[in-house]
Length: 519
Image: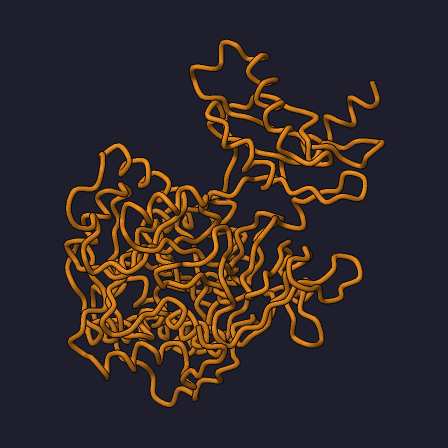
């Protein structure tokens, strides 16, 4: 992967305009409704831009856009920016409380959202005084909407183009301000890291449209296939029919796909996803190495992972899509133009290879800041972002993540990674799912607590089973990691991308520990 990169000095919507000028008849999107060329998508973005300009009443407004898996989202996303306004990403899966937070924090004035979200907003209008208009996405351009006003000022590339909210796993979701320069730079970085070009066909087997996949494909002039069918095998068949070169999926769906392929028996002839496939790319949370290995073996292509966050537009690291992929368990090297280091948790000094500390990143994709200026951006005077993730770099610059700072805890003076303990527990065939966090302890500071979801046949012999599982895991864990508290849980609460919801669990356990100590 090159260490540096050049990217065009264009506004975000200029990526689509450039693609339409270079290859007007090229396929930009393929959905169940058919194909859309770059020229058609660019023209549709113009119509959304005109609609946004008319409804907002002038430049500088914030336009909510629901990132649904269809052609309306990219048209509205680029159109909102083209109108001289800022696009605010709106997850159509969130409910009233989440919508109220996003629309209030961002002071959204106009919204292009799916019908279900529009219905929810109708019940919130009295609490959203800034909201002037709500338009259902697929009805936005059903009628003539006029043209863009003349005399729009040239776009400042350091102005906000998009506001994206964090997932909120460590607190309330925060609005991240991403500039035109941030997003265009990361589009170029992602295209280089994923080896995208005008001959690429990307299949997105995702529940929502992610701007990383959108911007990088448009930058490269690649075609995108949107698969709305949640069944992994159906998505694989679609990849074969459309000649997909890159397959994007979430870990939970890829895990299910690996199981489906294993049940289908040994591979007979050809690659199930088609001969054009060059890589399967996983994102959102960690994909188990065993799952990645099984998929790579069955599909005959590397299964690679990356790393990033909303604050990084979002990609900062990626494994190589070459045949070797990269060392198991890593999230790859820094993408072109990006620097990464690991610093001591307390002294904040850079550490050498294989030393564990907090991951810091800097590069042109680094956000302008948070929407709320009172929130600490985590960016120091030299431009390093403290990510809040614990990890280490090997001698080749491959990044290995250990856990989140908010999730790790100390037993005496030793750092315990819940994720590492979970990975050991998960190898026991009697464990269907598990979650690990800290139980407050007056002597050691904290001890390891584990919540385990048992597979059905083992539930009747509950106590014997739990003792046996814990004994087996503890023999493989360091003294300070060993499980001291365990209980059966019905399910592990997880975020939409599969990460355990540890924050609420920690709070509940702290309350229980306090009651126990007082008894």
